[in-house]
View 1 (cartoon, protein in one colour):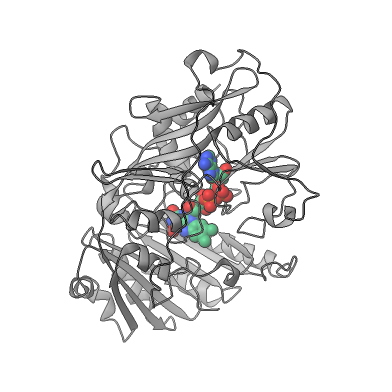
View 2: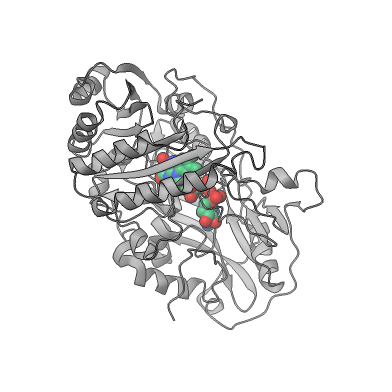
Length: 497
Ligand SMILES: Cc1cc2nc3c(=O)[nH]c(=O)nc-3n(C[C@H](O)[C@H](O)[C@H](O)COP(=O)(O)OP(=O)(O)OC[C@H]3O[C@@H](n4cnc5c(N)ncnc54)[C@H](O)[C@@H]3O)c2cc1C
């Protein structure tokens, strides 16, 4: 287990097939549609609402498993969890929470890295059963239920030879990833996931205690679409479906390289950071430094194995790494590098950072010394190359995601404890957290900004770190669509006053 990557990209052999089960989603028929008059403060009251959908309460046998998110470091005891089955269930849940003054959280894939999709004594509106997909290969658009996870989305689209950018972990919710930005192997080719988002259905607050449905696109509520592209996680409403502009993608080449030990780290890191953000846009790479190994993972879209090896030659020629190369359908390759959640440690902690200028040797030395002093074998320093399409892929109308000029993204991360065994990691928790804090602090002179999808708890200027100059506009959009600040958590966007 020690050598497994957090994002599960180590498996060299792609298992073919394993496609997603996608069922037609329930339509929004019957759900009230918001108009301008019903938003904003004041307004009409609604008749008392009832919770509908698949409801899980504390006395139910599946309550414990339904409460648990991916990161078991965060344990919550919600009052009730509603697995919504259609948009009307979402309207009912939001109205019920408002009428009964109950705190609420929205959950999709349950991978929030601070446990913010759950809340003690509150209502969890879980949209993970909203699974549907309608793909139009003629117009290259796809409308999907917001409950798809990334594996379901990638494999469903890949069957039609189309794709959008996603992250690498299949069980992460497509909504959670896209609404915060969403990067992965296809980022340098297609931009961020949120760059392809051209529409959404979203349930927002309306009136004094009601909820209603908005259909958002470039022409309707364009300000909200802009905000959903990078700042939409649990801030403005509950997204029930997502419409993407998809891109043709027939095949990819997947390359992995593994170096034993960290003795080549300076040369590998420096070569990677000077080549990966500037290479052919079709090539996306991640470099992962573990306590005793260095891993390179690369995906070349629509290329040949020879091209991939040529583009990666500056790295592959350093020392003698173990190299694997595969070619195939993106859905099959993506499926093949997944690792079951059960094989992951229970608890995880990360700290996100973007970088605009290459790390000097001193910064690479910091990475090396912290990795040699890692608290667990499941610790790593993860990087993702930016550059390429992401520099200019912002769609018409723009995005709240700001980090277009990053060279790369990085995060120190540690995993510990055994899944399903509460308290199994307690002794390591303070050590791992201190290691992350000191590691990220040491890199501060070399980084610019942070990633909202990997939130940095305790960071002073978190809003600016996530969204740069977009913060004021986001607060305005918040005041317009959630004036009572119903969608609220530790780092939610406050409404402009
Ligand atoms: C193992 C792992 C690997 C990762 N790899 C990557 C990666 O390669 N690239 C990358 O970009 N990110 C990556 N991430 C970060 C990931 O994008 C975020 O954790 C993401 O927000 C998780 O989404 P979720 O739906 O699974 O989580 P959830 O916990 O369900 O939701 C996360 C947040 O989004 C909100 N939210 C979810 N669905 C909706 C909705 N429909 N409407 C409104 N708000 C909603 C929740 O309220 C919460 O605030 C990774 C995370 C993990 C744990």
